[in-house]
Image (cartoon, rainbow, N blue to C red; front, side):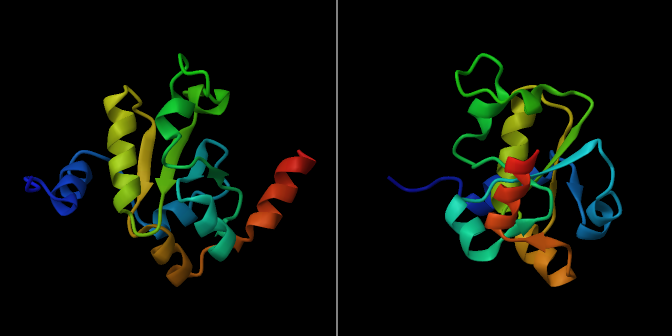
Length: 140
């Protein structure tokens, strides 16, 4: 069966409908308690490359389940309407699709980062290892 709509078209359609921030815009808000950075990459990517300092890990495959209060996997953090959840992935493709999916679920307080992790690293934005992130989480 031929693919009638490729990933590029899906990503572009999502990008046309979601809020996208640059790395500079996100870095300017790093101390904003109302912004929650959400790393949706696979845990193996985090283990190999690290993550953004103080980000929350929500694997792409579980995101909708963690957001939905009716799900047995719901994470209360995502019900906090006073927060803006800013998603990122490796290049900004998965996060665009994920942001669109969350909007389709009814979330209005969600956006993503243009260029994702690659742009984050290239800009020299703050990074921590997965082990450092886990240690912080345990100490809270």
